[in-house]
Image (cartoon, rainbow, N blue to C red; front, side, top):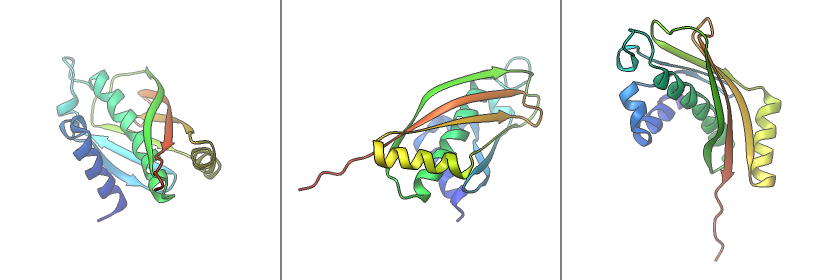
Amino acid sequence: MSEAEKLQQKIRRTIPLSEAMQFAIDSLDTGNIHVSAPLEPNVNIHGTGFAGSIYSVAVLTGWALCTHILEQAAVDAELVVAKAEIRYRAPVAGELHCATSVDAGQREAFLQAARAQGKGLLALEIQVGDDRQAVLQATYCAIPKTTSQG
């Protein structure tokens, strides 16, 4: 089973809404992720993507990439969205597609801050649709778990 499939299963198991939305990780590597969700379970009364679903799939896209980065670096951390703002630019008329990426410098700064300072922040821009029908600016916060010595 691929890393993408394992992470998708983890997300669907621990975040029930992702299962209902049929969130799927299409591709994943160290610095890039592409996800999708079909329109049908995420539709609004106009026959286009429901704004709440668009936001949720976009937030999960960034969360999944950050989770993957932490897991690849063996950093056991709680990961939360510290801040997120979305701009809806046009209706999403078909399947929801989201993508984001991070370069090596951003990734290393995120991991270094998490390890050394006890809190790592990573700001991502998540694009929805090939024509950027929506754009989410989100900052994710990783706080490493501490283990008690005894």
